[in-house]
Picture 1 (tube, helix red, strand yellow):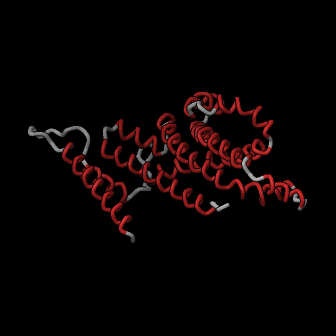
Picture 2 (cartoon, one colour):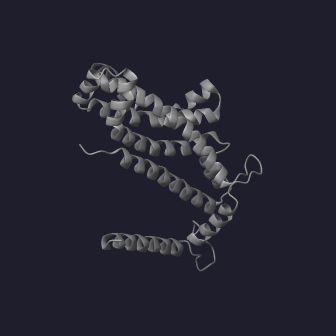
Picture 3 (cartoon, one colour):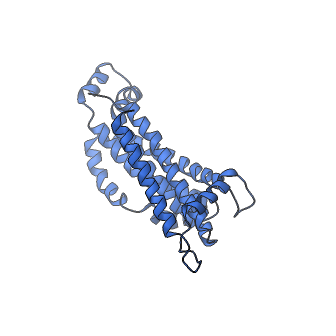
Length: 261
């Protein structure tokens, strides 16, 4: 391990220790014995130990373990994100190969892209009348645009020589897609996948706060209603850790598909 890496680790540990110390100090009881607002790291750590010891229990609609709630959220995320990725990559390839079509479609994309995914929630609830599927569609809308834009950009910037060679070899359209277009555009596509994963994870937590029932977003809101702030903070930390793991996985994938010209 190099000295630079050791220094980074030491600084990171010191920052974490300093933050935990200030947090515990700020949450210490006042002279009168009353707590000063948020629970401290020791209380949150104890809550984390209790919840982590049995994360998958199911005692009814409003009493499920945090692990089970995360699985519900990840299931919705997987469905909406996968469908969005397939649709966006196919549309992005078509738009990237046709500049004229791209210019025709781009104004509509620019109008739809800034709309918050949660703004679609009332329409989804009204049309499909299924809260869980509405949350999946929110994930779909939050994932679609970054993947579409990056895919179209990646395909549009492929060297014409690659496409010309594939035409000389008389590859079929599917052959060109899987052997030339997608491999050449893979770094840009994975970059879009990585961006959209973060957006999708944020969206599903917010959507579950609205629809209720199950999911880590609902868990946070339900614990807040019970004034269990230690559980709320632990759930927030769990959301962050899952987000880091998802981003780490796609980051590894981006390094695999990267290539040098």
